[in-house]
Image (tube, rainbow, N blue to C red):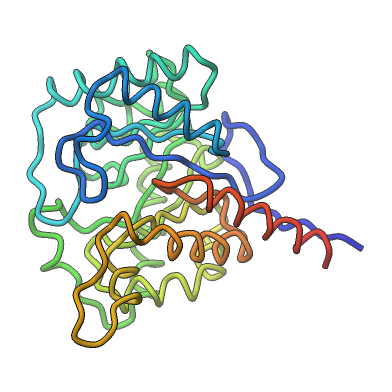
Length: 286
């Protein structure tokens, strides 16, 4: 008898019968893994369409690097980078998410066709974000976040990372709902790599079922992150560069899919698309 994990879904988004694959399009010159490769609008739209062809279910478009130590771009530059790409992908029928911490960018992106706002700060970076998303009536990703990229490494201090992330996410979810966003529109993200060291990230991956217990769809964004570099590094060696961590990313995607994640966010789609489909097939055979 086959079984199906209830991964949940956010109101306003399509429903998939397995863990969804969110492909990443960074319209930035300085992202940690692929900065500059898709900085041109035409190239970025083509890349997004290529990711869909490789198995992505939705595309996350961002114009501001959130790598550790990154400084922020100004709002006009972020708008210039992001909006034409969102509009171009949406015009092709792609389900588009916008990766931004600014309410103005979120609002303009929704007007251009984005169906999801993915704010790594969970609405903390811009006080206008929550009322803006509430008014737009679109789904919203609430990520665990403790501060901006330029100092987040200093904030990676935990006595019990799972307990503290759960508590802080729950508090943030309550604030978002109090701000007017419907609970059914919330997606949660444990914020792997954000104010966390490798042992913290690994502990969170090991306890994804506890994060799902918060009752909302779970987005896992492990792609190419530093903790995978640490896992892959032999003693005394240098961690492999970000683009050599895709097999490790697919491994985490399989784990996340098997434990009930709603979606995984990745740069290289094909291997992860295969991984989540295998996880679904195994689930169906149980």
